[in-house]
Amino acid sequence: MEQPEESPGFLLWHVTLRWQRDVTAVLQPLGLTHVQFVLLATAWWLNDHGGKPSQVELATVAGTDVKMASQVIRALERKELITRETSATDTRIRRLGVTDAGAALAPRAIEAVDRALLARLSPTTGRTFVTALKQLR
Image 1 (tube, rainbow, N blue to C red):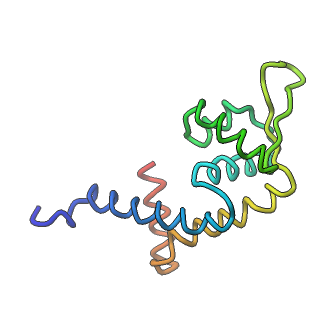
Image 2: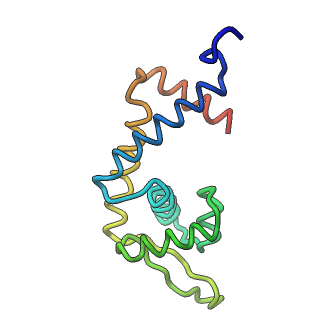
């Protein structure tokens, strides 16, 4: 390899850094941090598909640390974007619901974040990129 720019790992690192800056910029006007966005969007999707996840289930699906997710969920609850309800079958478990405000915000935030990621790509290249990301995941 003659240049670092030829290394996929080096390129991915730089793309990740740029994407993190872009995501922070698009989420700031929406009043969300990146982690808040991930947990809200995941909870919204799960709620929209018939589920009310526990905090552990949400963290698992989102790929986040359970303890950190718990703190972020409390922040989302204070912002009135998520509710935590005691499970009918196990009082130790809190089921998460997305409020009307959260349900209105989540798809807007998802669109903004996806647009920020794919903004520099043509639609065809964007679809190819998403396919490649699925394979890498």
